[in-house]
Image (cartoon, rainbow, N blue to C red; front, side, top):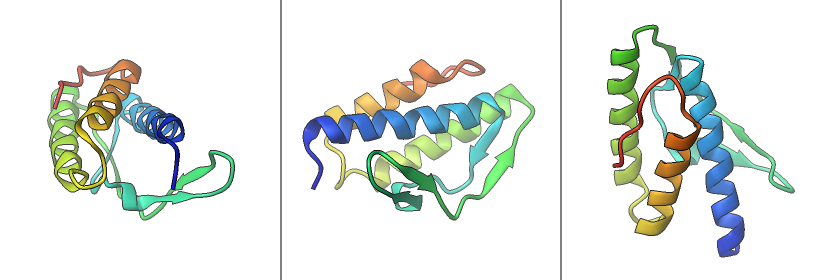
Length: 103
């Protein structure tokens, strides 16, 4: 089990990865944390990815928002509200091509 500090660090790292994908106009079609393989010393890999390239910023924004809403529902039993808010804020802070709403 991870410490609170390690959980926050991991959430920030995963959020930055997702933001990087968004900034490149890609979105994960089925975003969930079960698609992240954990290694040693802060290593993680995205597996079973179904990336979709979306050129329209409006469509990208809509798709990302939909995936974040879905992810929030899927993680209600894994992340407490403060952890979710932290993850969502990290995605928003690191995304530059579209605005990420608070979900």
